[in-house]
Image (cartoon, rainbow, N blue to C red; front, side):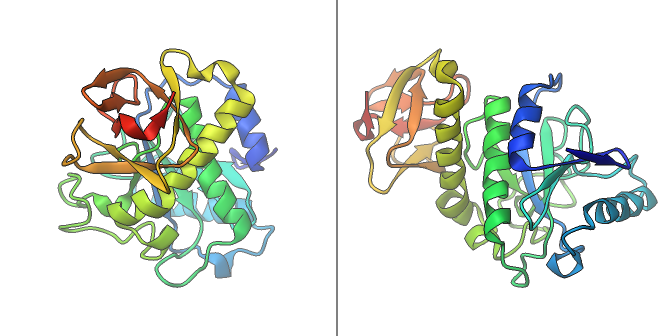
Length: 267
């Protein structure tokens, strides 16, 4: 880990260990995903991480923020930086900051930059590791895009009204709720499930464990009904905990209303 200007630059594996050796007091229920737009890939040299973060910090101070807005910044080379303490509320999305963590992915993903393989892995894993740390199930309710919130009201509108394109019109297939549920969330689910089983054998306590058998994915719905809104999906082979049953449905979150069809689970 390298530290400069109060920012900590880490590899994704170092970030994993850093999370496990630190304690956090703030309740977290939301992971915000953004792109910086500028700086973009063209301004990244491979060695100017700290200079770019200082530039962003200075720009945010000029806008009246108390420090850099985002808690975490990811880079094209697969590294990431803890910029704003995780216990400090970010200035990321109006109406969604108090229990949120703001993650800025360096790049312009409005049909300009193409996510590198290393960046892709870190973007997925940082979301998965934060889900593990704060006991979040990856869905479009717990992992959100800036584009889904109205800039004026702070209300979640799923892309209508006055919005930004952030994290980009080409970010993991698009910036809509539907593209996130299809292309982004399943990769985080897979990463989170694999990491939990490898590093924390007791992580399944509190619920009955099951394996997803649907092919290729199983929809997570906001209530126990096939007509209910889909808030994410699970890939075949994913491991889940079942906390309650209702008719032919299983709730896979200890508190939130996240339901899947029982016939696609193997206990």
